[in-house]
Image 1 (cartoon, rainbow, N blue to C red):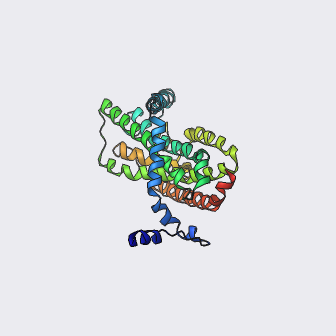
Image 2: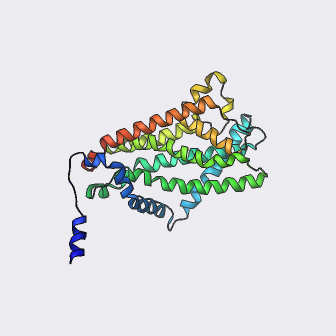
Image 3: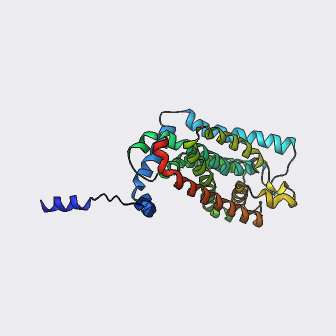
Length: 282
């Protein structure tokens, strides 16, 4: 009897102005199991009892690589990075780009897709768009296996720089989360923002050095070109995968890090500022 009373006393709900804000990071850790459940659910929905889901993760990067290799490598005659085959250089750029675009696409509609959950219980809403990134990471793992097979086909081995690849994978996720949080929050209030994401992805694919080396950009413009944060991530991936054949442009890479940090701060601050109104707007 005493044990039952003590357990009931330990479960106390405290309603206090500003308490949710001051304990936000603690709540994120407390709801880590919800994060895992949502992430696993999104992955299961994407791949369970489907064929096209897995096939699309394989066919899309391969077809894009072939098209870019023919257009930029053969027709336009653009150079590769060092002695690396043009196809491998392109695929090394597609890895972070598809990770970025997938996270942006999955997160942008995540709050709308979980409207019932948001309206019923309290939890840090940021868990939903971050958990949706799990699907993009699974696609990334599949693409990484394809790259390994492609490198074995060409007989091209990476150097010691490949050890830094996990850092650039984490950086690619951070590059994606800043704009994703911003667009996700805006999409709750202005539903037409969901049409902006495909446009950003389509435009960004061609203005980012995915199908070509960033070294072809004139030196006078390369620093300003690096204001696109995806540029630094793609250059970092190529530096890791191509074994140093691709060199990092450090001034541009550092400015890319600054832009990433600015977008993360902007996206998180705006998301937190509008988070309290999500249940009413949805």
